[in-house]
Image (tube, rainbow, N blue to C red):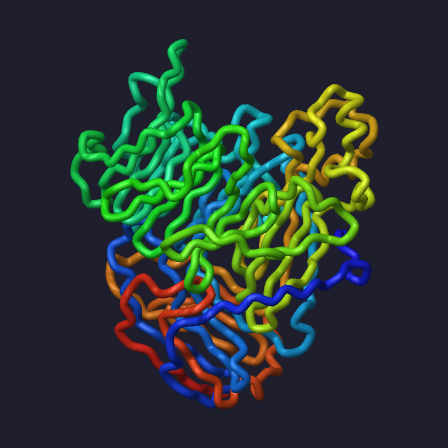
Length: 525
């Protein structure tokens, strides 16, 4: 099913110079049959963003290949940090892509994606925090196993830490089979995050006299013998009771969180500080955070644009991304971020727009919408406002969200939702069955030249090989093939006199140590 008509959509040019630090470390003459080989030590896994392994640029300084680890928190869930991406940009038809719609997860009108070990899960609150697991071989959804600590809620998660698994569910935290944080005696723990050897979460208790909301940063690593010690935590009192984040992020050794009241808080050197004070009545929400080159990007509402952070202040990036010319400029929300095939991908509410930014071109490319209906209009801010009013719903009930972006094999998996993950009722007679199933859907997008794989954690340095052959690309770890994808390479000229920059690139600077590195040439097979 084709969901975009790219011939009708404009390509808007936005120019903003981003400086790239570092100098190329070697010059190569390469062709298909080239292997980028390195031994890298990522250190102890303490929840950090691992960053980029290398980047290859041609003689015109354009990126043509690279590898690294995406770390993004999209609204409700964080991506799997152990997923490694390797990309090669084709020189012919670089904007070509295709899409396919997966069977509907049957979780009503909205889902969000979780990924773990290169498998995707669809989450919805409509089914009492239901989670469904996708089986790529059978092409079917099934109910996902419920963790021992309870069902996954919004802002919970399951993540790999070293060789183990850290689970945030049921108001508590477990590492493998051991509970390290029990439920509070008062209130609720929610919206967890683990980074730089600290477990972060919000704690709210509501009472008739007001109660409290606190933000915790608790020291803990996978080799800690006992449970979380709350007496060792650095605690920030939120300005408003019930403050909730939609995303977390890292910049260097700093951790950022933004509340739904617009409070921006930074944890550095074991202390909290307020970068921007919370303020009721002023809309400033951040729905996604992701490392991109030398900065942290924050996806914001109501501008529908990105902000950046480089250690001092938040800076708005005007026109990042632009909007389709046919829709209103009001109440826009940049909600999802990803890096795919070396480019920045952004999903925008309320018309489920998808935009791709190529830094070398300094150009935004529209990839259309994830919905075929209704027709675009700037006469209303959101889709189906009249229909929402007819059923006594909030005006933006049927707004269209891009809620998930997960690199999976050679594809980027995308998900959709209405404003909330609402239950579907047959009385909503203005949508056909096919139209309503575009809400709560999963779409598989593919551009030639991207490959995602799950690394096997070893608690030591590992040897990684990134191989370009004439008809495929592949990733090896310690001699074992992790993943491969078809790729017809006719780009040998682009690799002539190309330069390799090790430990830097689109995923940010490498958070680890390179023990050895080399570029090998072999005969094409």
